[in-house]
Every structure is written in structure tokens, then in C-alpha cells.
Image 1 (cartoon, rainbow, N blue to C red):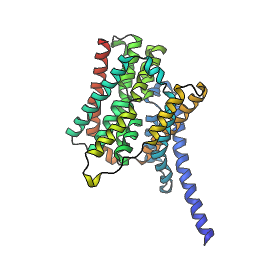
Image 2 (tube, rainbow, N blue to C red):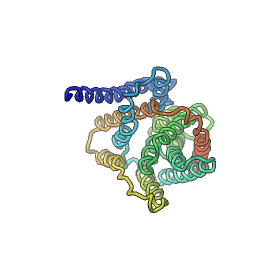
Image 3 (spheres, helix red, strand yellow):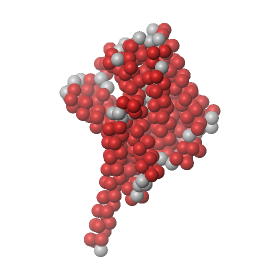
Image 4 (cartoon, helix red, strand yellow):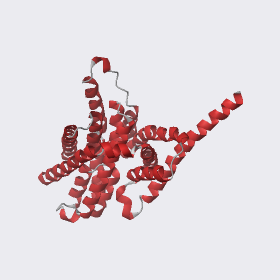
Length: 335
């Protein structure tokens, strides 16, 4: 009897690990494909979602693997966000100047408000509207997951919002790249523009690349300035959502340990406590883990739900992305 229980237990662990290994495999494939010039602008994370969806649709995933897949989608992205802190050097943010910081704050605040209320107007549920707004305004999928833990969003809402934001970020990256020469911006201005308005770091790098290495460096610094706003925005939204609940629905806010970890990693990198090689390795692992999480989301996503509920969030995010781009362009021209 005991031996039988052990065999069942071992089988459960084996299936759990196989689910995680599957997401790792998909993430690795996505990272390789992301290096192909034609599709590099799509980015590792978006490709992980798409391959995950394709894998589930064509090959299928055994039900017993889903515990491992679910673990990857819920937990590995948070670990990835912690490690991603190694990419942010706060000194670079300060050196970028007050104008860049104000541009980031203005863009994030205006986009958050417009996307949220437009989504609500289009009858999008509150949590999904918040997730879509934050993902569009701050830093894509990482922002979606950070906010979801603070407002206790359903997993399907988190996956849908992340997919919408990643998809639109890719489309706008393509637009920026194709029409770069028509923007009448200097390379550094185009770098600021890309960093201030696009969703994921991969999008920012791909879009600013046609303007040269200086533009890419500036774009990443500006983008990371927006990423630095993730922690205060997540805490503020969590507090406001909980405050507006009825007394019987209120509960203590979850401690965002992964955001604290993100800040801790930022400080380690800023203080120069580790070498460039070490910080680079952490960032590479961060994207691998985040890719695994995106693969898990792609596998678990309900395509029927996206068809039924995805139209309104997409419209809100499209409008928000356009406004984000227009504001960024106008502010840069006025600086």
C-alpha cells in the first residue's frame, strides 16, 4: 500500500516537472526564433505565448502536465521580474534628466487613465480594464502580473491582458520601424520616443535599432525609467482597489515580495556590487523564466474567452497606445 502511494506521488512529481520542462522548451525555442532578424521585433515573450498557443492547439498537452504549466505561468514570471531588476541602474535613470522622468510620469498617468476609463466605457470588467491599462502604460506583461497580484485578478484576466498588450506592442514596434524616417526626429529623440511609448523592452530595442546604437541606449534608459514606476503604481492601485471595496470584502493587501525583490536587485546593480557579466546573466535568466511563464499562459489561455472578451480590451489598448505615442511625440518636440 505504502509503495503504491509512493509511486503515485512520484508520478505526480514527474508530471509536474514535465509541465515545467515543456514551458522551458518552448521558451528556449522562442529565444532562438527571436534572434532571427525578420521576427526579432516580435520579441521573446510574445513568441513564447504564440508558440504555447500553437503547441496546445496542434500537439496538445496532457492534463497531468497542467499543474507544472500552471506553476510556471503563475510563479516563474514573478521570479523573472525579480531578476529583471538587475537591468535597471538607478544612476542611469537620474542621469537621463528630469525631463525624461517627467515624460515617463505624464505618459504613464495619462495612458492609465484613458485606457482604464475607455475599457470601462466599453463594458470591460474592472480588473481586466486595470490590467490592460497598466500593461499598456508601464511595461507590458510584467506590469500585468505585478498589478494582478495586488488586485487579486483571475488568471484568465491576467493571461488575456498580457496577450493583448504583447500583441499591440509588437504591432506598434513594426509601425515605428517601418516609418522611422518619417518621424522627423533625431536618433536620440527617436530613442526617447521609443522608450517612452512602447510596451516591452524587446519592443523598445527592436524599434529604436534603425536609428543606431546611441538611440537604442537612450531608448532602454527611458524605458527603464517607466519600469521604475511599476512598484509605486502597483502599490497605489492595490491600496485604492482595496479601499473601494465594501468592509466585508476588504482583506489585507498581499505583500508584493517579488516587487521588493525587484527593487533589491536594482539596488545591487546600482551600487555595483556585482560585475557586468553577473548582471547580464541574471537578465538572461530573467527573460528565460518570463518566457516560460508566457509559454504557460499560452498553453492555459482560453481562446474562446479571448474571442468573446478580447475585442473591447484590444480597442481600449489600441486607443491608449496611439495616445501614448502622440503625447510622447509632442512632448519630445516641445523639450
